[in-house]
Amino acid sequence: MKRSICVMGFVIIALSIAFSGCQEDNNNSDKKYEGVYLESDVVELAYANLEFITKFNPESERDIVETVELEYRFHNIAGRDININVTVKYYNKDDTLLETIAGKQTNNLFKDYTEKMINNITYNGDKVTQVDHVIIIAEEV
Image (cartoon, rainbow, N blue to C red):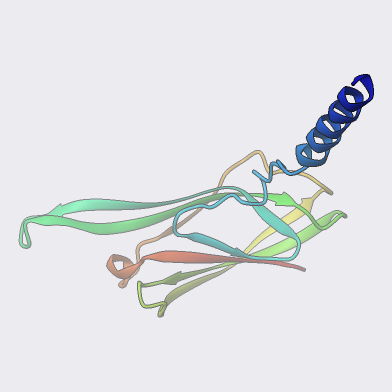
């Protein structure tokens, strides 16, 4: 009787240990930012926000998008200090490229560093009312 209780206790403890590793928390890698996507091998998004600034149009009697403001911060995942060049591409709902804003450069992004300041890119071009989402391309230079 004592032996069966010990075996049962051992089985319960072994099962508890086996299943305890299954609850991994991947909050950093699974972050999703609505309407903002990143293409990069050297950084990940630590924060991103895409805001559509509207203004009331009396002719159509509705709000119309006047400006699209993109905010983001990067976290260096390259394993070394890097310099990056950022390009932002604006797309409509059909994934048609509307506009490309190129050339914002970030220097000395240290190994495993997360930017403290928020980067801003504003778009208010001719096709601003069609913008649905953006892709940020961050490439090492």
